[in-house]
Length: 480
Image 1: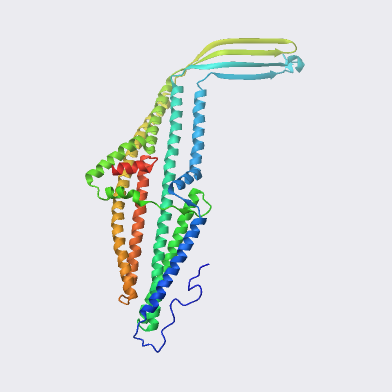
Image 2 (image 1 turned 90 degrees about the vertical axis):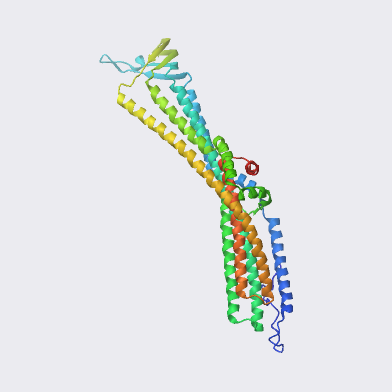
């Protein structure tokens, strides 16, 4: 196992310069070599750990995480069972329109007749009957009820589709959160190592009398602060990874495949500099797709259709019902040796018209109110989804611009950090300058990470709103 100098309980720097050396002489060339050796050792250790981790850990990409999350979703499994149950209800409605077959069996015996006791064996009778009855007419209520059953099944399917995209959004959010937390931890690790080196230099300078105790304490405080930030970033990564593992059902901690941001460069360029006219055209393109594909709009439309069918069903309750007995047979066994049988066919007509008109009128009025409410819900769904689309597009515009500006900011702050670090090594910058440069660097790095993954989440939301199966369809519409 590779051990650093600190783990061996060795000093980070070479021993202090002997007292015979003038204290005004700065041995920069001597401890600069030691610092370079320290950095190389730490880099080698990090590379070694990274390679070993990749060899032993399971690596998954975003698409695999989505598949695992969908397979592990309990809510989708419940919707699968709900669809099967609704299909069975639909079949029951169909079966009710077919001829109804009924059969019965009976037996009786008497111990008294005309106030005289008789033998139960002499009066024992038994028999059976079977009949087939078909509904001929009932004002079309069966067909309306069957249509309502089909709407119910389709409604459950749409609910399952909505849940499908909801699960994908959750997986995407958890996946991006892990990558963002991982990037934040790596950035904190860089600044922590810079703080370690800064403290090591400050320690040598303090022993050489080049800085005062206050500057040394400031370097020590900066190192402790960076270590605390690194630990917080590590805990954040652990929490986000736990959430992803729970959603996907993975037991071991996986290694996540990084997102290839180069495939989004054209989309970033288009969205960051889009004009108002182009933004409106893009909105209309997405809106036309949503009108065709959106599960939420389809569900609202089905609820409106169901309310219409229920209203029609209430009206048709005034229609009479006509049933035809296609076949009827009855066989009786009379004790001790008599057998009787009969069969008949015929048509029985039954009609019912509600006399309590106030009850019917009340039900009719209620169905009208339900229909009006469903129409309002449909209009509200259109407005709500339209607003969601505008918000998602606005977020993608904003995040795309933030990504590009954050890249430039990080490029400048990184160069500034390297410049200040080099000046600090040469005793031309103070501990405060290094702390300030480090803070600028970590803030710029975190801003870029947040903007990048927020941009990906806004694209994921657009994908779900449009019910796209493949993200390439979304990117094609944005860039064309």
